[in-house]
Image 1: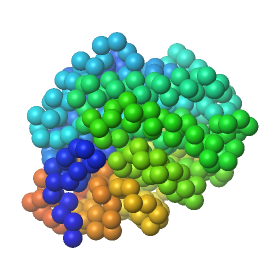
Image 2 (image 1 turned 60 degrees about the horizontal axis):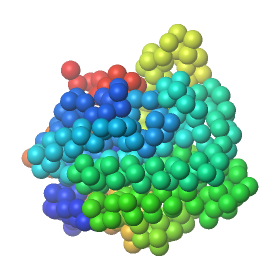
Image 3 (image 1 turned 45 degrees about the horizontal axis):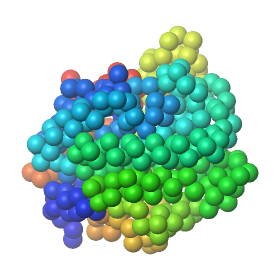
Length: 387
């Protein structure tokens, strides 16, 4: 049996255990830089015992943020706050990662004040308009921005960078045959749709060398008809393994652009999400939000059945997430061959959950999977059940 509380290495980075706080956007960076509130947010998870906490979401450009309020890595002076955040987490004995990415079609132009972009011109239910297709020159510039952003994080003392290749964000959109309808070298067969995310991973690795661990968060299944699915995802993961640019892959699912609840499972917080928007949009979400926020029943470790297929095909370390609420479940995942487990909502409910796992091995997270934490990303991400 693998001891989940024993030290483990993520590439060049030693972690004190195999538990990682998953990237869940914090809603605490209104001016796109680190704030004291963001530092306190991650300090809680570090003090609670995680091996590493993940800052989410750091955009490589303002256009690449979802609503103009995420940390933007090309903003002057952003590194000072990042260094302060890294120091605070390190002082609690944990490592710190940052998820970096470009939102692509998931971006809301009303927030970013810039047009949303994608591999092809497709309709955006988030911006209520068609997004713009990127030119080859713009694609190459985005690759360079990823490298620059990773270097900013390395210089700030971060231990790891997680490249966002899931949830319908730009790199995920290029992988999707439904969203990538290009007929040039960036679209068509998987080898060409995979070109941009592979170039990004290589550029990030080259930018940071061995100073940081480099991982990717990869969709196994978009959860939409005609989207990116397990067969192509496993083949793409094999390409990344052969490229030798990653220290691990975190397996995820769903699309913030097309089917967000496929990742979260449990109750769909339509009414709560509608309340976050002004009256015209609020009414529309209440009436039609059930079509976008579909309901999927919650089962513990619900991504495990699909994720096990990757263990059979890859030797690269894999990270499991998705509804892990008991120590027994984490233990079973590690015994099956996963290198680490990520927890999100369970830690929002109880930042010190790991301490309870240590003292009560049979304990279960208090998270009830109501998903009412989802709308709080607009008002500081939190569990609404915690006073």
